[in-house]
Image 1 (tube, rainbow, N blue to C red):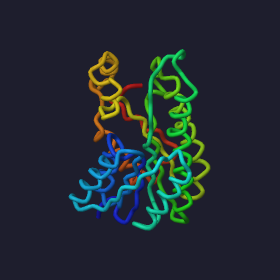
Image 2: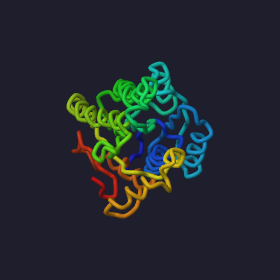
Image 3: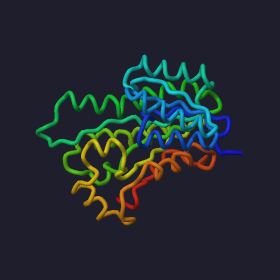
Image 4: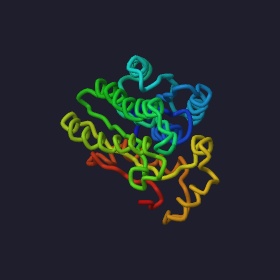
Amino acid sequence: MKKLTNKVAVVTGASKGIGASIAIALASEGAAVVVNYASSKAGADKVVDEIIKNGGRAIAIQGDVAQKDDVDKLFAETQKAFGNADILVNNAGVYQFGTIEEITAEEFHRQFNTNVLGLLLATQGAVKGFGDKGGSIINISSTVTRITPPGSSVYTGTKGAVDSITQVLSKELGPKKIRVNAINPGMVETEGTHTAGFIGSDFQTQIESTTPLGRIGQPNDIAPVAVFLASDDSGWLTGETIIASGGVR
């Protein structure tokens, strides 16, 4: 039997990049997967099509995780399609680097609303449905909280919050049999890092020069870690932060 047979997983921000890879990996282990997206319907539909083509079950549901009504709709439609969720992957995130002089209130709120408030609202929605059976919550954070690159004050601040929230909720939700863990990826090649200009940049070269395994990551380097945290293989783990970075610290 596959590791996640009869499980239902919600992956936020799953239309591309790390989220898409995680959604596909969870489905390959038997989970019915809800592919949440904010704006890229074509990307989400492509992920769903790939899962179904490989014999899995998946649907795409649009919703901005920073909006409570959208989150309520996400979990209501999940329940209607597959039943209550067992797994939540809080992957939705946005970022923009900039010096202290360039920070604006608008950009601060954009990043914190999605990366922190969105995570909290999605967790609220999942916890309501987990019930007595418990569940697994996986928060996608970042190694920026350890390497603290210049120009990343706001983004690193959001991910520092994610790391702290992971610890708090692991204690708060443990008595409900809900495990809460985080994955902190290093630099990963995605559509987002291409768009941001990181791929092929001096920043990539610098990261690779300090990475013991000598390369940046790919989305499929992160997905198996999420499968592990979603499955009973990690049943005794909560409040953990797994650094998936090729050795960068």
